[in-house]
Image (cartoon, rainbow, N blue to C red):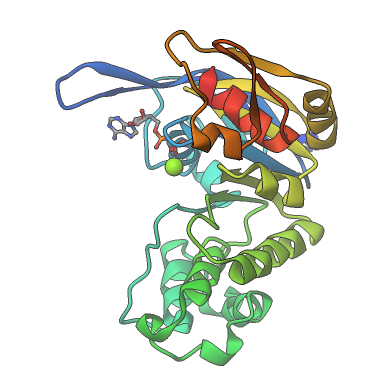
Amino acid sequence: MKEAKKNDIEIIKLNKVYLDDKKNSVKALKDISFNVKKGSMLALLGPNGAGKSSLINILAGIVNKSSGKVLINGCDFELEQRAAKQSIGVVPQELVIDPYFTPKETLEFQAGYYGIKKSDRITFQLLKKLKLEDKANAYVRHLSGGMKRRLMIAKAMVHSPQVLILDEPTAGVDVSLRELLWQNIKDLNKKGTTILITTHYLEEAEALCKDVAIINKGEIVVNENIKKLVKKIDKKVLKIYFDKLSYLPNGLKKIGFKKKKMMKFLLIISPLITLLILLLMK
Ligand SMILES: Nc1ncnc2c1ncn2[C@@H]1O[C@H](COP(=O)(O)OP(=O)(O)O)[C@@H](O)[C@H]1O
Ligand SMILES: [Mg+2]
């Protein structure tokens, strides 16, 4: 019998190098290692360009890694790709759904791609779970933005994966829709799905997850319990020294900077903003 695995995702020394238009190499992921425990929900937090989508796309099998190892539900992505892919559902950052299909057709076709027999498909359970049952036969192009996002989640779950990965699912969506999506994601996690969610909002990571991995410039800079992390930041004072600044710009005043001495500014602001500024400065 296969030993029960403690981690549903194991990422070991993962590297990704792209070549840009001028053939210069861009290191998008640098020796990344972290795990996501079975049944847990981990936030991968980082600013734009940090490497979040590169990592997600490697897990989705859309982008090839340069080196390193990825295990999904104990299966090596390279050696047991089929088994690994069966265990994972990925909701990409961009909406990828055909506007001329209905939600029901979208899920039926997706299940077909996975080779799931008609009698084994869970189309209606998924539509119900994601509160789309009323729209089962409407054209996707007539759905609201929030409904389309929920359909993307349902589409990633047609094969009942143990692991669901969501790449910035609430980027650019309004507050009420964001909360609804958060609730959907929490419900899936409560029912046992392991979730990895990428975001550039610390607030989102805090609302959903106990643990956070922070990625910046392709490196994991923090991987720990969010509450503990925020407590630590609370105790910190960040001093920023500017060389050529003789006055304090309004933008900095607004987020809490105070001028201490000539050329020196002391930052006394909320821990969340401090964390993001620390990240951006690294
Ligand atoms: N296909 C690509 N070709 C070249 N560079 C890329 C490609 N995709 C991403 N990058 C670069 O890799 C880095 C990480 O990008 P990405 O993974 O999209 O970050 P994030 O999702 O955190 O915003 C960026 O510098 C980006 O420009
Ligand atoms: Mg991205």
